[in-house]
Length: 237
Image (cartoon, helix red, strand yellow):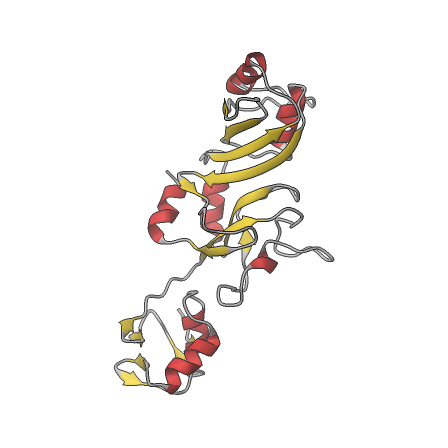
């Protein structure tokens, strides 16, 4: 890895902002190769130089992985002129150039969006060959019956002739209006189109997990946090 500014490298990992780094450096709490440094603009190579922050060894990761609880009305894109995107919701202390959503949710769909700058990982989990399972909670306009449930489970044929893979589905409420749906693919408006093929309309849709990783229930709408290594492995499980 080439050398970069010390404050940029430390801030890139999400725990500290650049202002935090400057404050820590002024207090003598940042060392490079055993020596306290005050110049946050100095160039270092985190793969070769030994960096300590606040008395702890600094661990550097080349890529970043962020869990966002997407609100309604936000676009799943890196940029979209005139509209707020999921990347716009990433706070300054986590932001990096090159961030993008790994997979998309419709503008009016809420819940788990993975934001990263690791293209290879995104390609791996989105590849049709991998079929990473994603779980959604859908609010319907009418109760769904056993015949419709079976259609989901064997694979619905959409109006355009596309044959969906079998999907897991179960009714969560006594009124039959709230269902959990598990998909291993992600076609455009797929759940809404599947519901329409069964005579139902999706009023609300919320993604609650990707692979084996559930959306953190502590995250309010619009909030995000880092995903650690153990959690990242769950996405592929």
